[in-house]
Length: 462
Image (cartoon, rainbow, N blue to C red; front, side):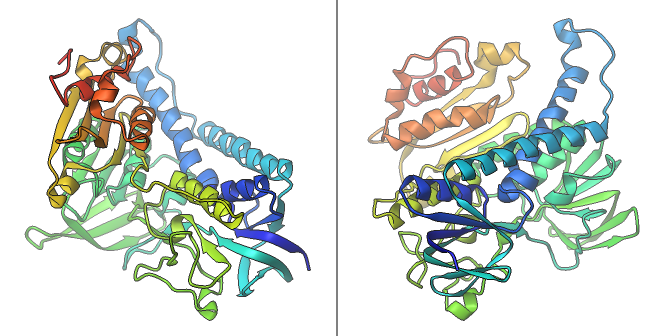
């Protein structure tokens, strides 16, 4: 029986980052993973492969729509789907091998197999039982489906199946207008599929700033994606190669049917805790099936911790990473810290969408007075040159102190630009601090400064 200071169950971004920080703190560490490769959902069937397909399909879009305008003449490239999937697999391989290298470099043992916790201080992997002073559950999440919708990963798929379809569908129906559905819908739209998104609510990307939701949907419609809002999917009927999606419109209770070659179920994710033995251990769960933890990421059972998608909060890889480092620090006798008020969210469509902190809606609910500074990318020289003038930067600041409370960006490189505001918020900066900071010209980031200027006297180029 091997003995460790810490055993982490799950090797996704939360788990492997946690393992590295534990090792850096001098703890004897092992990580449990049943997949053939490390990296969890994110690296194998999530964030990384989807970004590869988003990048490839965006390059095709640029060739088809913008190259000729720039004087780049020639025949538009054809899509070799098999090769595109090979490129995606190569991208996954480079990343998962990188994580494996980091495990070896930090002398972290990989216990291959699926883990369970038979009792406090012990982790069972296969037939072997290992001892650990502390156990961290980082087992992630799995796609959530709907009643009446049976996933076969061929005709009715989750994000996993959507990343490895045998061919590009003529008609793709996406159930759910969240991040995953819109990203993968964008991929297949660019590759030539007809894409229809069916959403239960009246707005896309639930929880985001309402103005961004409206603008984002307009841009996606302009790109050719159609939306059916306020629709409750009842069931999906399938043959070997086709599907019929039955839904009910909430406004008039009418029954509707739409045909599809492939149906992508993108209705969110749920914690994956199956087989861990949590019930027998008496570990408390929330009403939503998450593991309940205290301010130090410890469950109600001393010595057992949980991080990432299995606990409350947004299911984001970087949130899991932060919690992984913090829990490791806590176990090693240091102070673990996660600022949950400054966790950015990004949608990797084109244009990208980035957000952090409060929205106008949450500030209104709190009865908090705020100022809005907004700047359109149409006023940004770099964006205009690069066919990227759609969208805007919006900064929300406290009306009395001018402290930045949140920001919402839809536009080029929004996923990178948002971090300037994250750093500012981490330091408690005011909109004026940002406005007084010199930004290089011509860059997309000037739009962030202009939005900060707009919180006071006004933007210069508006």
